[in-house]
Structure formats: structure tokens, C-alpha cells
Length: 86
Image (spheres, rainbow, N blue to C red):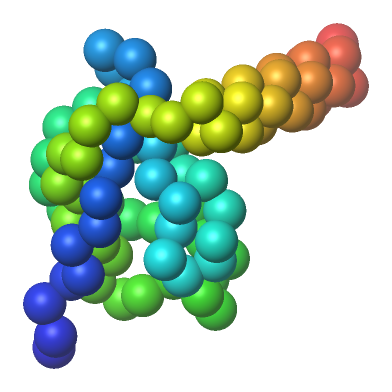
């Protein structure tokens, strides 16, 4: 099996790194540390071995806006799921 691809990840804050995924093009978020990760892509796009994060500096303003939008979307979905389980 081939070695996992190394990808640049950018610091969003002290706990989260973000990266534009080389496989699906979406912005992925991972815990802030270098190492092997599993992409959040649909299964058909995700490579078998995952990818290896390497720190590449602070997130750009565009990445910060995309991450904020994604976090808002996730919060809305969680709220709807919790409301359905009441």
C-alpha cells in the first residue's frame, strides 16, 4: 500500500486545524496536531490510507470564513436532531 499523502493544514485556533481537502475540495477540520487523519469525504472519494497533516501556518481569512459557515451549519443540524429526539 502507498504511503498516505502529506497535506498542509492551517491553524484556525489553538484546538483546530483546517485544510482544503485534496480529494473532495471541501474544508476539513481536525484537532490541532500533525499526524495521520481520516478525511471527512464521502467514502468513494476518501483514500484508504487517509492523509498526514503537516502544519503550514495560520488559516487565511477565506478559510476562517468557510470554517465559521461550516460550524454554523453543523450547529443548526445538531439543534434539529436534538429537537426531534424530545
